Amino acid sequence: MKRKIILLVAIALLLSLVGLYYFYQYPVKDKIIQVSSEEVSDLINMEVRFDNYRFFNGNNLELSGLSIRSPYPKEDYKAVNPHHVDWLNAKFKNVRIYNFDYLQFIKNRRFRASSVEIEGADIEVYRDKTLPEPPFEHKPLVASLLRKLNADVGVDTLFIRSSRVHYYEKTEFSDQPGKLNFENLYASGYNLTNHPEKLSADPIFTLDVRARLMGEATISAKVLFDLTSEADFFEMTAEVAPFEAHILNQMIGGVLPIEIQEGQFKGIDLDFQADEDRSSGWVDFEYENMKFEFTNTEESGLKSFVSNKALGLAIRKNNLKDKRNYRQGRIEFERRKDRFIFNYWWNSLKSGLINTMMSDAAKFLNLDEKAMEPPREED
Image (cartoon, rainbow, N blue to C red; front, side):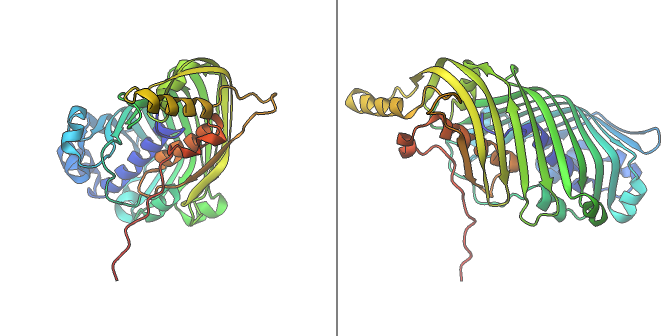
């Protein structure tokens, strides 16, 4: 499962911002239309294809049949990469930009639009974390990313419709990757800007999202970004409706060495705040009668018996609000600054879920990603 609650929105947002940057390479309207997929592929080191650009009804721009993918097949992941990175395959049926004043964009690098619509996005992301860590490279969060753009950006509304995302992550805990799927995803964003006057009037960029988690459980979320915050402050709330036990197996398959056999899961409520350095908050995750089996079958004999016995004591089988031993999961995660924001979201949620499911006896397990600092410069 591994990415945070609104993975598709984050990817779409980042792709849109990257797209804005690379549009600057082509400073007239005709050349924008004439940009080839090969030229864009060379610029961003990805395979880029698109069917058509067109302006319609005045200053409205449509890009149809866009696809962006890593420049090698997923099957070649380990042969190509000495370190673990994200493999990406993203397709977008239509991207439309309304009331886009391209003359201001050409003359003054001012990207203004009443709305940006992304329709029919289908995104697959894969990461194999059994490979070594990649070299450190700082990844900015949303507010910092907007500040770094050499352009005046102002998008009143951002819409994502009829979309889905599949995230897969391979770890040492399982032969099969854990996965997180969002189907029928709809999202709306408001006030995406770095313009000082607009930020003075309203510094908050708001994202509202709803989707079907693993195609079954309804999820809704809201993220508020303070675009004036030098520390990249944001806060997130989310709700997941009750869901079947087998859904959780797919989500935690690469996180905990267990397979859940049965149980009643009554939903998840999430509330946390975060900045450039760390996240903190709470997760309410109610469940009962959870039965599970261990998936680590490599060990045998006494060692296996002792480790499985310890894990059996460490994992809590019930967590109900009307019981005295109910545990509200504590979210505490120190951000890995070499990862994008959706990794930050997922690990924040994961820290709360694990804190809920694991007893105090589970502190010996190293299940969370640890923050990685940039290499120090030599004196």
